[in-house]
Image 1 (tube, rainbow, N blue to C red):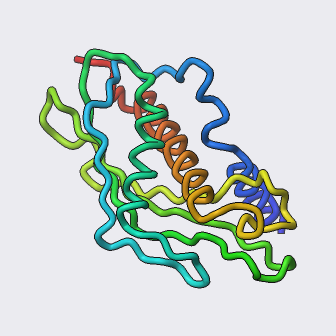
Image 2: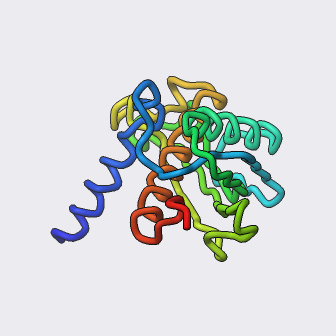
Length: 180
């Protein structure tokens, strides 16, 4: 029982973090990192149950914009590329009872490419799942207070922050961006 409560609290804390909250601060250290290409695709994007509709073009644009916003702050001399694939999403709808307070979800796969080495840093794509920020509180779902575009922007900013967290972890563990 304690484990279940700990997991639920962890998920709630992660969901509460707004991915754009720290963009006015200096970026976290990532070694000699510069994002050269930021490519997203959505050929297999699956709309989840009870989700609002959004086009694949909009999914791709909002994700690449949020990624560019976060990683454009890095000014290293070594170039890296992101390949991102939107796998699935749920954008909470309005009109669902308050009791459910549905939350929006975005699932992406990420591949990081080292330009100088001409190889993938993660041969198997890293799957990242993010929830919307809990800025509306736990009772009211974002479907009541935000448009589909606002929900998607929030999810994409959270995804970009999750990518940054993953890169920091990989750089610390495997020195991905530290040069030779």
